[in-house]
Length: 244
Image (cartoon, rainbow, N blue to C red; front, side, top):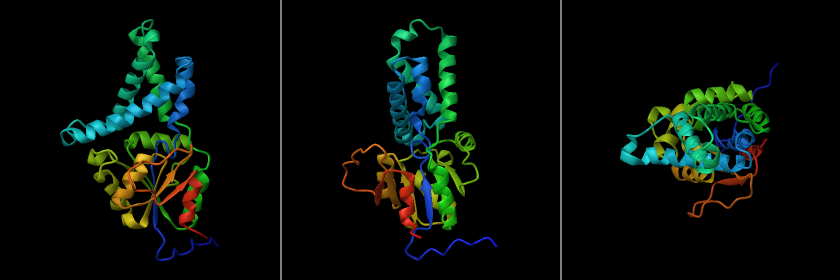
C-alpha cells in the first residue's frame, strides 16, 4: 500500500514556489557555447547578457505602466544582441549579417535548454513526499518554461508552472508575485518563495512570502534593511522549512 504524505503542522508553510532562471536553471551555462563562438569572451558575454535581460524586464515594466511589455523570449534575444555588440565589436566587423544571426540563434537555442542544477529532482521529490504544493513562478513565458522543464527532465514534478506573461508585469512588480497565491490557493504568508537572485528574494519578502535566498556564490544580500526568511547555499535548504 502506498504511504500517504504526513500532515503538515498548522504553523508550517503549505507551498513552495521556485524562481526558474538562476534558481532551477543555470543561466550562466550558456558561457561554454559563448566561449566557442567568441573566444576569450564567453563568461563576460553570459554575465552581460543576464544583466541586460533583467534590466530590460524592469524597463518595460516600469515605463508607461507596462505599455512597452514584450515576452521574456523577446527580451532575452534583445539582451543577447546587445551583449554581443558590446563585447565583440572586433569580431562583428568580420561577420556578415547571416553569420551574426546564426550565432544569435545558436545561443538562443542553448538558452532554451539551460543546464538544471543537480539537486532539483531530489528536492522536488522530497517536497512531494511531504505533501507540499510546489510550483514555478517565473518571468519566463510559457513556451520557454515548458521546453526548459522537458529538457531538464523536471516536467511533471511541479504542481504549477506560473508565468508572469498573463499580467504583463515582470518581477519585482507585486502583480507578478500575486499570481502565485492565486494559482495555488495558498496565502503568501504560508508560501515559501525560493530564489537565487537576491533582488527577487528581497521583493518576494516585501510581498509577504516566506523566502529562501539560495546564495550559491557567497555574495552579500541586498543592503535595503530586509533580510530573507532564510539563506542557504543550495535548493535542499528549502527542506528545513518542512522538518520530518
